[in-house]
Image (cartoon, rainbow over all chains, first blue to last red):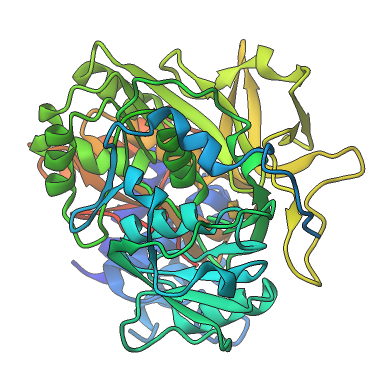
Length: 81
Length: 457
């Protein structure tokens, strides 16, 4: 599975588990408007670390955090594994 | 600190009198001590004068030897430091320094424990004849390490009076314990056995749970005590069906409904009780109604025991509490009113209080507090779960998330469907931030020397 598909599947899984209604998952969707709360994001990041072997949020970065879903996917696609 | 006393005062010798002449024994896997023989024989290879009034570190491997030495040292030594089994050299040196040890009782095996003292006495079984009667002129302080699940133990001082205050001698109990008798929980059982007339069966660290249970069956143990973790291990052993105790007792950790129910189902005729006790607070109460937590009516003031709740934490004042923490820079054990802060967090739930866990063991999920024990209770309530351990997993968003390791019951398959089912049940039972977000299956969980679930960090 590609990084993109892994992330989209994990988002849907976490939302379903936590009983959240997701906005349509488009690349320009701001993450804060996705329907996920901070606990959901925390769980998502942990799941993606397990699935992809990378946690770009904990890596040294230049302070730029993803704003949109597209940013998030790119964040993981360019992360060091 | 200590004072001499008259021989009429409380002494182990007086305590053991009811069982005299009945040939009762303290048995481990490898050794057996006939308690009657101690009247005219000794386990120590020096005359007792060399240990009189000393602060003695007791560092022996087998519990039958520890039993002999404890009986011999009570009233003779000023202090006995009961060193936990398997204590490493660095910890031992630190404990000996804090307790100002000036004599050592040890196995005599190389390498000898190093506590920096010249007076060194070897403890051996079988016993050898005693040259001169023992002198017992001290109200000996029993120094016990605390039984925390992580970090260097603190030392607390008890006396025979505080240790034996919780119980009335009762004749017909054939005691056995998973505990080591050099820790508070095991020492309680050891002293109860001495006060009775029957034998005591003790565990061995190198023995399987299955083999120990078979020994208990052979010994006909009627009163068996251990931590919930000990009992969960026992429930996974076929040999537990060979036991028919009158009392199965849990202490040292939070007893959960699932473990209590499993024991009650296995031993329908037995009293399944959980005792709330700690090295510092002593025995506080015993709950016998088979349910986790304790009745709210236990809170309040009584002649011999006052329990109150402050900052959600249990505080206890009673005759069973330790005297003090030991050491020059030791913190105060009791507040100005004589209460010991147990550090155990409780919450009101209907007509009961339930234990939430240790104040220091909290997982912080984005500012929300999670007690691992509460989550473990929810996991253990699942029909496929035998035991569980909950810990913090670092997370860049919330600081931490709740993670779990689970031991499944026999017959449950360690697959994705089981994993999802258990996690889903937790999300129903717990607030979202408390439910585990990751779960791994493990064959077993590490248990500390004290019989408690080993916590991370």
